[in-house]
Length: 347
Image 1 (cartoon, rainbow, N blue to C red):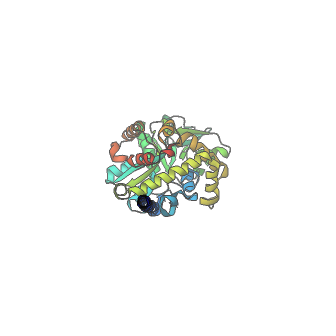
Image 2 (cartoon, one colour):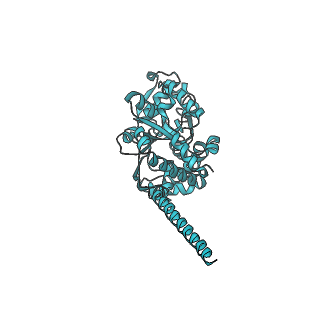
Image 3 (spheres, rainbow, N blue to C red):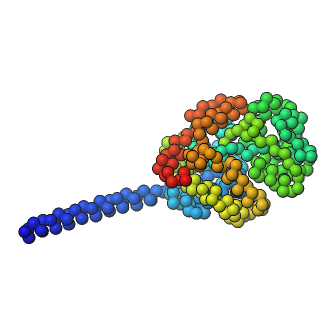
């Protein structure tokens, strides 16, 4: 009887020890997973540090990038040759768009891919003053002086003309910077801009404006897209997924409280830029409402690019003179894995 009790006690003790060892092993595994260290995160932004990047600002400020395993975060202000910065290794991720990335892939053989996008609809516009240039249709571009910034924006403008069958010689392209002053001063009839940025700035100065939206005139492409190298996809996949997860969390915060994101642009990340507060608050909210969120993102999550949207982008590129396949330009497998592993991110 006593022997039986001791044997039972011994078995319980042994079982408890086994469970304890197993628990320690699991704890050790969890600790190992939590210690992921991807080093410094460098992200090449497409523009200055304004409300366009409230999601990234939130992800940084709220510690999501740190939680994801990045030791430091460097959000590099644009504009810049984003694709070149990514190819050179200066940035793990660059923010660009299919119209600027596809030519680099096709013409230079660059091993680049888009792995997700913030804006489901691009905000590019030809901005004009209603009582002067008043460019309402693409045909109104003919004979006009259009202010166009060098680099990716020039590629976009050329694509707009090509997609609408307008010869480049029919329009006078005037080199400008990003300040819309040449439009206000009458140096140009139209100005390549963002409908959520320069258009608001000029209108807030008391001018009635007209917007010729690219998305409604032959170029309905996504933008604020995440561009990475194929080498990073193959050999640094975990870091890219960590970036996507943290950035999704940041954008969810931006959508929940757009004013907080604008505050970060005004008071932290762009505090030395002299940003227009009214414009920043307007842009932060408006981009969420008309560019970031769609029925598709509601169903499948932020940064989604559906098969239908990919087809539309490829058709846009073809109309602009760039024939490229989905596999050459996009790889959404990382985003799919992030949502499969973190289904709560969709909510």
